[in-house]
Length: 211
Ligand SMILES: C[S@@+](CC[C@H](N)C(=O)[O-])C[C@H]1O[C@@H](n2cnc3c(N)ncnc32)[C@H](O)[C@@H]1O
Image 1 (tube, rainbow, N blue to C red):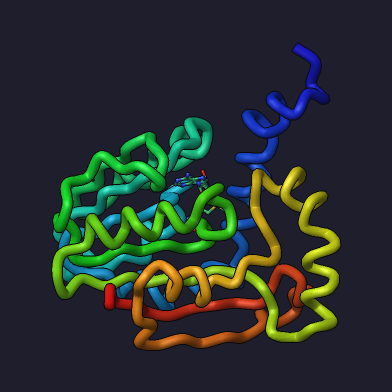
Image 2 (cartoon, rainbow, N blue to C red):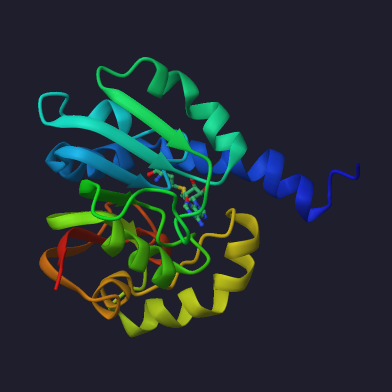
């Protein structure tokens, strides 16, 4: 097989680049601010290589069901869920069509995945379905800046970035997507990561409940 084919890149190279970028210390700091809030039965959408696993509070979490269609990231993450102090089940499937039962999760956690899921509005509809009444969505994502100058470059560079970065989009309005899917955002912090280009560093971190 020719290594320059997009299929080869996205199957064998992009997952390692995504895992490397998601392993940065500055990203781990963001995880520490959101993941310990998860409680009960947790649906983690886009669990990837399992980098959130060490940040869960084992005293609060009953079980984690991780969803991710990428077999390579699943393989990279396996040691993290095999060594966890709580039950983790990973299902290799798309968040746009999940096999989880309706009203079966207390918390949905999504970190750095709404940027990549091809149809985030379908994933959010599924999250709504799977959350129990009173359940909440925790999110930490990069996305569309509030600075028009940055947005101009996010829109320009997005097609190239998406090809190189495993389908990641620079310019999604994460809060808008969540609200459009029928969630009420109960807390939201927008900020740019220190020492990080605003193109990729603009963040949305918060909580939402189905309205
Ligand atoms: C940038 S990685 C983030 C991984 C992980 N959430 C983290 O914080 O390290 C984006 C993740 O979204 C996953 N993804 C892409 N399409 C998806 C889909 N349709 N359903 C669920 N996850 C998806 C990718 O496989 C990848 O694991």
